[in-house]
Image (cartoon, rainbow, N blue to C red; front, side):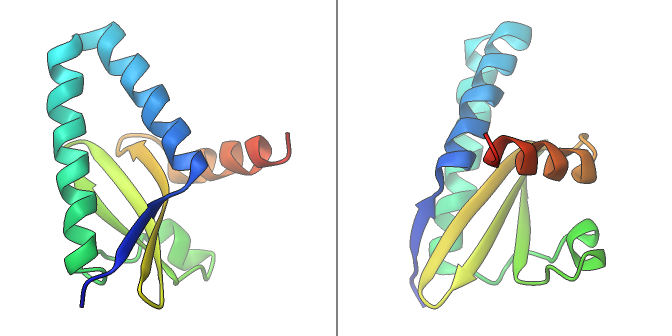
Length: 110
């Protein structure tokens, strides 16, 4: 099954923030490598949309429609609806998922 992949505005913002952090802290080459890995993981979701696992933090909240794939040190949270994969979140794996979700919730209210 081949799906269309849609990167939502919030996930695009996540990528911009990640880019700024990686370029500032580690340089352009690290960002380019990380971004290439993220793009490859997202493109893989078009062919294998159910390959990701349900994150524990989201399963505890009974949000089992969301899945994740890991790309390097980044977590990509997505949802599959019919033949479309929606990318909701791109975040560093070392960040606490509950605080990230809370920040995202507050950001969406602005």
